Image 1 (cartoon, rainbow, N blue to C red):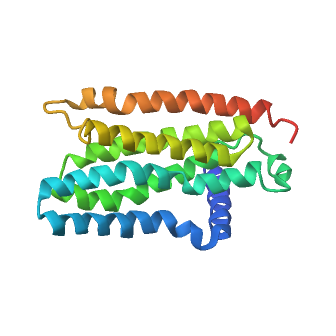
Image 2 (image 1 turned 180 degrees about the vertical axis):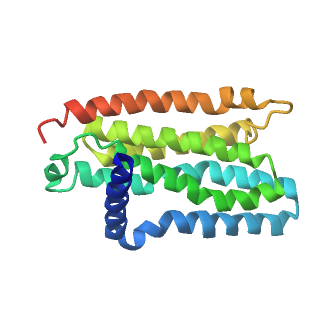
Length: 220
């Protein structure tokens, strides 16, 4: 019963926040199901090579998917931190981490149809989906932590953008794109080397974020 009330409250709250975003709420959907597929199709038409298509899927998704994963979370945190009158939102519940869990889960579900298509062509991309979910979690944790630590959503967004740009430069210079598809790597090895580090980083950032949320904003 308590779980049902929790889900209902957060689903209702999330619905009104998304509704308040207007057309901006559709940005992740447009990126995932229009921009990325069009780019993939254009690359395949130009090169007529499945390996190049696979490389393009990995390359474009590893940058755009994590960025889009925090899109709604940014708007949610903006209401909690920077919007005028946000003190009212802390009357009943000061800990706002719970409000970010449902958007993360819904985004992971939103990715499934896209990767269902991708894995028909390249079955190993299910591993890529798992890694993206871990990266998305780390992105969410960073935004949550930085927002409450600095009391500003803009600084956390700038940090994410800078990190993403640095990742693009490093991968381009090193010509990396398949570091999580090592030949002969078993499932346990994949989890340890490609998912566990992001999960550990996310847990640390979540803990720091909760402390900042609890103590720095306790007078709201």
